[in-house]
Length: 212
Image (tube, rainbow, N blue to C red; front, side):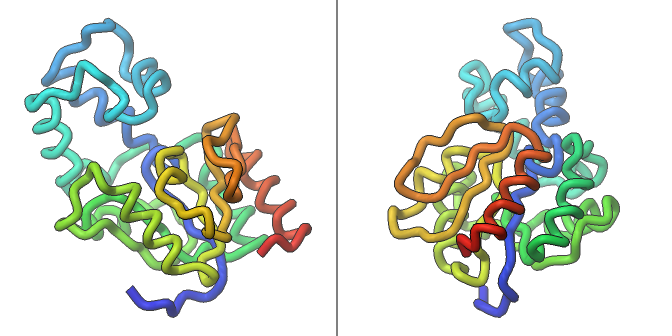
């Protein structure tokens, strides 16, 4: 991974651009049961990430998850997060989108590129997690990538607050924490944004205030 990117912003994909957990929960309900008797959407919104769902932390459920997240076909028809496409286009006019940084495996690069192009997201470098790194260490890996690429990549829009746990106190970039109303860290720049419209406004204000 070379530091050849022009200056701009990075985007996460799963649960930031694509509603990945919704489809994954459907697969888990079919193969691992539904103890709470909730709909797939209700489970997805309640927990946001499968590693937060205690009753699906067994080997059978983990096998289902691994099977689907390693499959190119799984990623081709994922639904969009509401307003993500429109707001990303708006943000791209304020500051270039220069990278997509995802904990998806490098094995599904082609389907990920297919999906991004299908929905007309800005062309940018796709950085995926090496297969040698366990899924459980995905956020640690991503934090390292962000620190390495700064200041070319000035920050990221990401939905996972655990990412911020792995960023050092010396990180100067900004995390726009989508789908959250509070931040775990106050020693680095983390801006919680409940909706994509809030992300776009936060990016606009950051440019006006010249924080980069």
